[in-house]
Length: 326
Image (cartoon, rainbow, N blue to C red; front, top):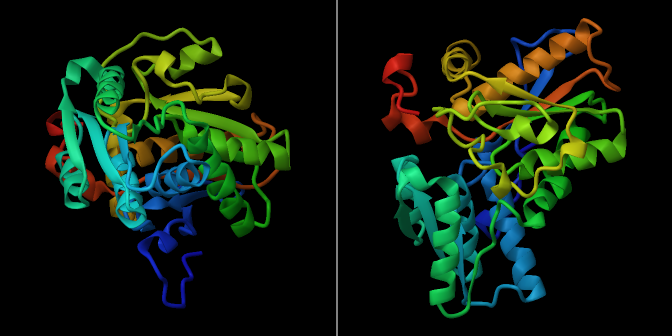
């Protein structure tokens, strides 16, 4: 993985083929492997959909050359789209709720994009509404809409899933991933289920998120600090297919914060809270497979570490839990 040995024509040629690395705290009998998506040029998993979506939209005429994409995003998708937009001759405008990472917004602007903030209290629903308003005001503008665009999941069906299976020679028993838009999990899960319908698929969210309600589990909405995954309004998460998910696992902010620090200290992974939540959930699934509590068709669990902790240093991610802003 990540074996580019020849000169490349564009930064877009470096998207994907990220390393798949063992999580050492997982059981030897059922190891967990994580895709390290910070190795992408924009340093997150969202580079995959930025490239894939824009190229496909340009190909089919949904987006015109020299046109504008307007996207509601917590940050990483904006960076991923901005990397692609700059190389493909497209303008980019991003609508970001105020509470999200300042580092991400700075990087979007550095890549030539315009950033528009919306009130934190309006959530992603407010950002989506504002993005649609802006697109209507601009000439030749479209909203890719990562929360509902099938190309989001398709990008992972076409790239992330096959890369995982190739690295492990197909020996995958379970797929575990955090759900923000749900595109990452849905794409990988669809690929995995086509390889073996018995593959165990687990969605990960923070406590206080409402994805579990989509699979019939009662839950109370609460604020959470874990960034990049979870939802307060499941009606905006149109890509999530309950039929592809065996269970939804919730991870507390406190546990995710502790795992962020453990992963750095013990395993050298400089990752953020969404990766930590995925790590804990994947290890739990691996232990249950080892103990015979979960049936799985393979001996490994795969997950995704979406980005780097460097995007969250200003929020005190490596400080004590009480001072972590999330």
